[in-house]
Length: 167
Image (cartoon, rainbow, N blue to C red; front, side, top):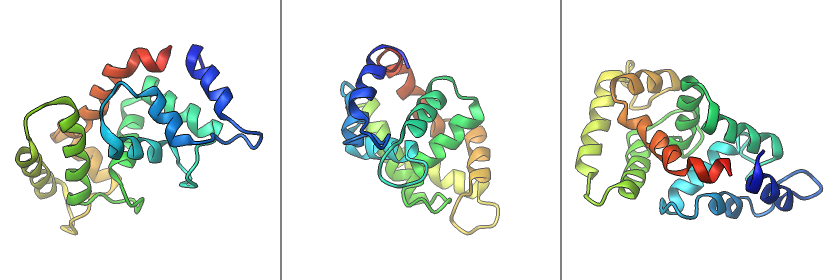
């Protein structure tokens, strides 16, 4: 891990190899980005693969690796974890709309909640194959092909913060 991240990570890790105050650590790297706490919480949860409310060294490195150098498939799976608020392995319309609205409002001043609602409705009409009002990871991957806006938020975030992360 280069520069500041390595130094900060070393100071944030305790003897048990877990990050102390992990959400503060994540916020520190993205402090200039005004995403608000919802997205930062979702980013933290996406890093915290085992959902133990802390990020160990392996999860930290793995998350950064996906964000910086991951394959398109890995980035899709990572973004799915961001949208999956309740960790049940499915996305609902409510989850998708909530995160998309939060992230969209970070990048743009105009209210796009109606547009996002329409996009989410269209995704579910086209992709929710079994009509259960939930998207599996596989269905989500199909939706990303049809409606790239869903995944573009993560890419926009990475583009805006690439130099912070790689310092």
